[in-house]
Image (cartoon, rainbow, N blue to C red; front, side, top):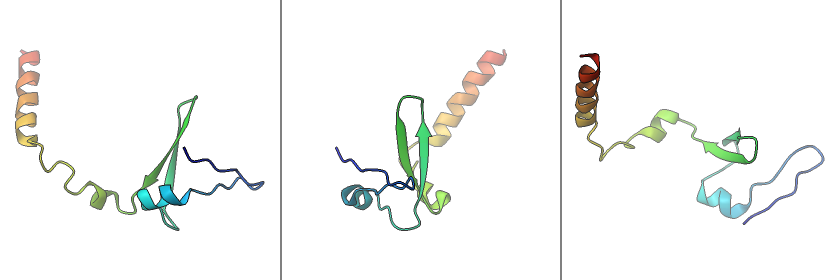
Length: 77
């Protein structure tokens, strides 16, 4: 577990090991998610579309779409 201390100005440092693992560099945007009990920090890609490229490569999306449509038709009667 890594830990840091917040400065008087509310700034924190991201530990070097985490910066390397998640490719966090100067200018990287970070999203802060607060669920009321914990805070999760997520690095955001500079180009969201490029980050998604190839993410469904091995998925059979056409088959999943056809199955969904079949189920939808069955519900509608």
